[in-house]
Length: 117
Image 1 (cartoon, rainbow, N blue to C red):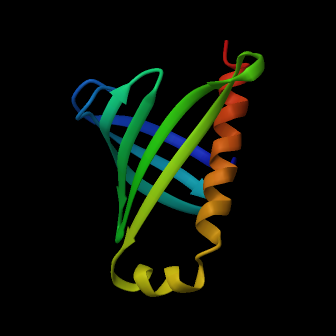
Image 2 (cartoon, rainbow, N blue to C red):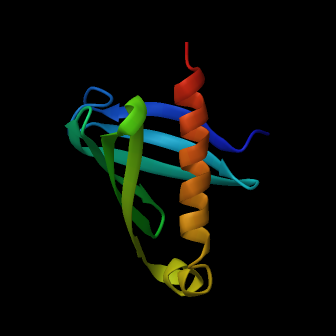
């Protein structure tokens, strides 16, 4: 099974618009993660922010795109994670995992965006 995003399914609203909710299913190293993304800000091309919620996990992500020299684009993502239950305890031991996984997801998206037809 391929790692990464496996499924997206609209739950509420028009997908991609402010307030819209989308169910997303990921494979994270053989572990299936089911979450709901709520679009908070959709101000393309400058900002896209969302809240992703899974069991005992909330991730607020603010994505900003900035033009840099040479006609290139810099993508800056700020995340804030909130954990509950056993995940809060596990997160203490997995702190380094979150930035690594975020970077891995960003690289996958970059590859997709640069090669989409």
